[in-house]
Length: 515
Image (cartoon, rainbow, N blue to C red; front, side, top):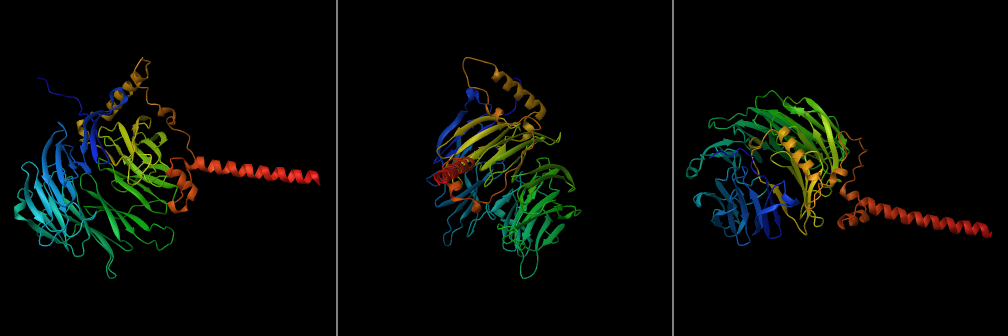
């Protein structure tokens, strides 16, 4: 029997009120996705990072684990008073957080294969910083936990030993384990009693280690986002303060620092425009990173791993950047409070491919094969116009579906290496698109949004001025909630005012004539 050589199929997890489904594709036969698993009782759902399993939290405090290939339920866990659940990167473990109760351990680590509880601990509260309580590296070879003034490391072969060594970091408030490989851990210590805040990097696996291999201190910092690159050689730290002492921003102040594990670079990233850091993201190769920054219209710049700028992506109403997992392409966009502009780039060829819009988008991500870009408008962030849009790599709209209420739309993770070279993939995709455009008696019309998308290297349009949420008029906000564009509402008001002015002119002319 010949071995299968074709790429794995793409899948999308779609969660609606109290149920979720698993779609296969794109490409979608007859223009609609096939449903692999439909209407599963669901309050929350999540894939493991390797895409082997997905977890469904049900309304009766049951956590069910499904195999992604067969879409069959392989294990379920009854967890009373369940608050949150999380899968380990390779789907070996399930971690659950129960409502705290006196004298009871409320965080449990379960072995999915056997269904056994293998470790328990007590945690009073759950925040974005301390959940999941036990952090795993992508290969699950390293696991650690943030505790008071220290980081605790486990023997992943035998959790019954408890933590096997600890790393003392007085005042540590958050930590991020590098994932590929799990060679280092970054710890953030907030400002305290006149001592500046700091980010410290330690090498993992050394019980006797007490000194960081790299360190950066800074004032005016209350929280940080810590982002490791693939290869664990560099760390981006977005330092955020709640108050901007220059009084330039209502949203506080942010700075971007770059720290390398070899100690060669420990400083600010040289950004060429004043203002907040909207987003900083490493490419999937870990060899370059992109930053969207500055007061609106924001600026976007790509840097190499030595922190040298290598490509300017221009300015506009942007706050989001998404790297294609296969390299070559990226999407620069403005979501959330911004109008939804998207620009697709071929950053290898250093050219802009197209620009389009995806208004009201809450989430956005490339497919694992790098050929499609999906945006979703979801509740509770937005209660109207919920839906999914899928674009081709060049910005043309491939698929759109609206929902009364949508909570989640996620690609099933796959290693990009399982798919062919991106150049060959887009060639085959383009040939399919050409076949679709041939006239036929039945079947869906080809993607129609290409007409809305400007051609390669479009004429740069003047970006709209940024208007923060609190600066919008009540009429514009009402129009957005009703699904109308603010431009339409304003044009109606302008028309009303025009008619009023014309009537006044007519009255004045009549009065002048009579006199």
